[in-house]
Length: 292
Image 1 (cartoon, rainbow, N blue to C red):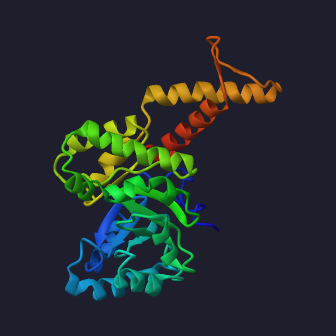
Image 2 (image 1 turned 120 degrees about the horizontal axis):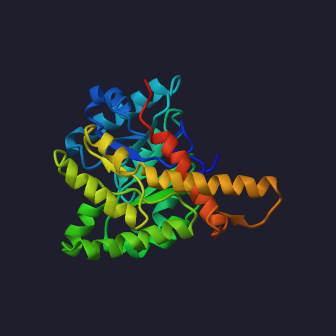
């Protein structure tokens, strides 16, 4: 398995929709996070943990990964380590590398592809978080690095560095990373955390705006945000019906040995549109509410 193989929700094969952070110094929350409905749980050793408790947080993460190795379940568990340019970050990787319950490493403050070389022989897929102007400018090189399984933006740090308050300006930065990920054949870029855990309408609107520019899924800082994120990225009934029409037409063309896919209204669609329709249907099935 290469780093680019582990980029989907383990249970469904579709890209992960929700990524839930949990502080590494709160081990009593790890199992609750895994039961929250998130596709990925991220045990955080970085910003969510005070410096005096970072060693404890690392030990907690390692213990949990060993514990879940025998029964990993359907939820992927990643760990956000500290900055790899610092000794603590490299020590985090050394302590966690090879643990069987580790599904991925989330790497903060990545500003160059060379940083990824510090992973050494660690087999875990790496997810690079770009949180600075230098990181965004290096997005293409970082995304193309063979150890990288996905990229994301750390929008709060980036906005603070650049003094960006305009959404249109932030969207330009997002699009640079969306392009870099797509060019490197990585999964879609998930959105950064929405800091107001009580503002569900604001979260929905923000997700819709990100989805419109090619982003997919979102990180969360509280379990109550998970259902909102899932709802925001669930295909609408209209989108699902359209995807079904395209998929059925493609299957009919395949049975008849036809190269062109024609819809009932006479329109033709090509292979990328068919592939997108099939992804939409897979996502709709994954996110469908459980039946009674």
